[in-house]
Amino acid sequence: MKWSIMVGVAALSLVGGKILAQPAAAPLDVRQIMQQHTNPATLAIWDVGNNAMGDEGGIDPALMDQEKWDRLAASATQLAEAGRAMGAGTSFIAAAADNSTVGEGEITMAQVQTHLDGDPAKFRELGEALAAHSDKLAAAARAKDAPAAGELIAAMDTVCEDCHARFWYPE
Ligand code: HEC
Image (cartoon, rainbow, N blue to C red; front, side, top):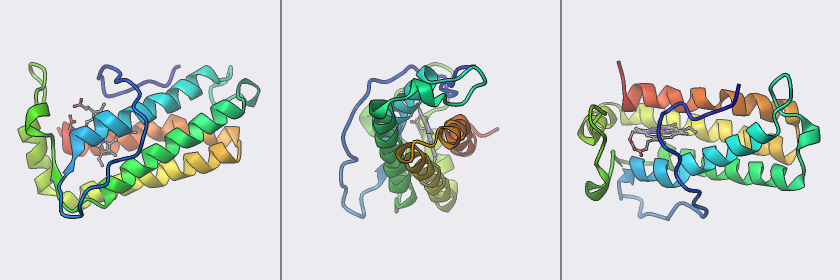
């Protein structure tokens, strides 16, 4: 089984770089951080993981090299920064006014805004959970610990899903 994006959204192109520093009081744009940081970093992690997957799943260290471990560590660090930015947000907007379009039948950004306004503390907590998980993955990549890295990559979609199921498309 390939690790894949569970959110059903087309892959966005890889964008490097750090999250732009914002004044403390500026609301955090959730869609922007998903599109520009969280998703590209996750796609890069899955790319390394899928290309080094062993017969039994997990990561086969023989299929890894220094460049791949470095890429995994860098992407996990980028993902941790995105999680920390969400964890540190004082207020949140679902999306910018000029980036609020959704497909037919999809949850609107106005609905997402209602979810965010309902429990920002929980949102911060789930952002911190993403940061903690990603920090562990970055550490495993730096230590070239294939079993740990494989397990952390496999569990990543649950960390995404925990927040999406609550703040994006709750039942
Ligand atoms: C702390 C909460 C939270 C976490 C953790 C989280 N997301 Fe999201 N994500 C959201 C919310 C809220 C939305 C809905 C707003 C939107 O559609 O952009 C969203 C939307 C998205 C979208 C759709 C973006 C778009 O074009 O509208 C993608 C892709 C995505 N997330 C990827 C991920 C991935 C991959 C992870 C895990 C590595 C993740 N998210 C973790 C809150 C989170």
